[in-house]
Amino acid sequence: MRIRLSFWLHYFFIVLFFLSCKIGPDPEQELEKIENEVEILPPGELYGDLFYDVQNKEIFEDSKTFVDVVPQQNVGLIRQRYNMLNDTSVTAVSDFVEQHFKIPGDEISFETDSSSINNHIAALWSVLKRPSDERISGTLIPLPNPYIVPGGRFREIYYWDSYFTMLGLEVDGEVETIQNMVDNFAYLINVYGFIPNGNRTYYLGRSQPPFFAMMVKTLADAKTIEVLPKYLAELEIEYNFWMDGTGRLENKKEYRRVVQMPDGEILNRYWDDNATPRPESYREDIKTAEIAVTKDPQLSKEEVYRDLRAGAESGWDFSSRWLEKGTNGKFDLSTIHTTDIVPVDLNSLLYNLEMTISEAAEIMGDSEKSEAFKLKAEKRKNAILKYHWNEEEGYFMDYNFRKSRQTSQFSLAGVYPLFFEVATDEQAGRVSAKIENMFLKPGGLVTTPYNTGEQWDAPNGWAPLQWLAIKGLQNYGNIDLANKIKSRWLKLNKDVYERTYKMLEKYNVEDLSKESGGGEYPTQDGFGWTNGVYQKLSSGK
Image (cartoon, rainbow, N blue to C red; front, side, top):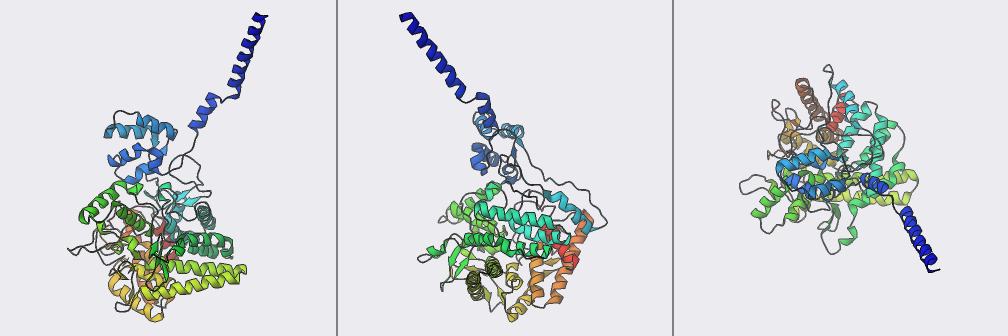
């Protein structure tokens, strides 16, 4: 009896053991699950020490290269393998990266039709187009629809670039592509509450100049139907992003992107939610911060990083607009103070956003909302005229709210009030004179009159600013100057194209025999917004 009982007890425990094994996780399935796990995170979180070692050891000349790599194996396993690596010399780290990642290139290879610049651009759209994204590990935020990238090192969609790109897409009948891009931005607004600088995780701390309302209007023009109401919800979400913190301004001057002006008006500034080096410009930012705090020990590196990031949100990265003049009379990037400045371009764009929301609400039959946003727009317009107009100079300037006065730097940001018809006729006439006397050069308009070595200064001209200035002048009847700028810009683009068969990110408008320069990287070929503005201006539409 004792033997039989022990037998059955033994049998019972064996059965339990096998049952527990059967209902537990299958090791092979678990391994497959780990190998297929997708991680989409900022590069510091994604790669840990490997990210910092790659950037600090200058494995790549361009800091942006590594943050755009595509892991070829499970990211968690890559991190583990790197942490077990004994040799972290430059050669060893470089070899490790090559073994575990797909390294991006400029990803543009195109045989041009040298007979026509317009045909070249029309054919380039298919080269710059990316399909809807698969969800894979890395820093790329997947988008549900195809889109156009600028080109060169810019391998993802960019916010404000895309409006100017759409101008050319409309001319070339690429209406479906415009629709897809607008829907991608609507998707980003609904997922993140705003449109990031670009669809990369390392851009999630900031946006860019808010051109979404203008994109929706471009889509409406391209489709010749009313589409504003369809995007009203997204327009409001974006507006709330820029206005976040307004209720906190009773006892302080600023919070995030909102600033309380001396007489109580609420205007906006550029900002970034992070105060760390930009992953895509990691080494450059650390160097700039070190120089800045050495010069001014009262500064913290975090303040410098924030201002650099805010400059990137402006799209003007970088420019004398955000800098102070040194004792030697020169501008230096280490003096950057973007977050102190209430920019005229940003507030003109937000005026347009308020007016667009009012228009969309009116179409929807919501008269109360329409009137509320029209009133917001009117208040902002009055504040722009009050704080940004310089009567003595006859030009629109940025405003330093810390010092309660305008900055002394002239820039083409001053044309935004003409583009959005905020300026009076008399102001527009004086701005026109300033543009002709201070900004007009042989190749078009120079961005600022200051040669600082930064790319958003002299001698460079940029397609978006040519378009904004030309349209702004046309709005106030200054057709002769608008045509002069247009003809010089188009000729420069065409001349460079005929020499190089390239469309460039920016151009030297002062000395037409030289290339553009300055900034953190070489001039890029592609190029989305240059293509778009050229097609639009040359079409005569």
